[in-house]
Image (cartoon, rainbow, N blue to C red; front, side):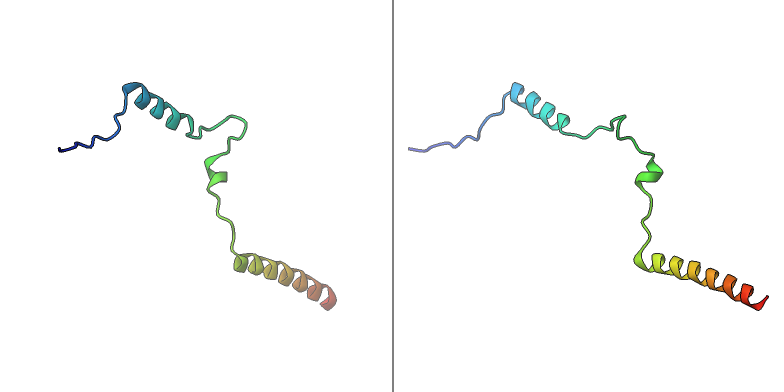
Length: 71
């Protein structure tokens, strides 16, 4: 005796329910948490860049102090 294995059948109602469930889980932009795309995509400076900026700031302060002492 031969047996025929048939997979589970999906009803149209189940298919509609599945599509609705998937679509309900998609994040939509809300007005409360809306950000400009530029803010969302801004580049965070690397540690090296932060150190470089700090160095340049301190260097500028020291140059001003040297100029004041020279006067």
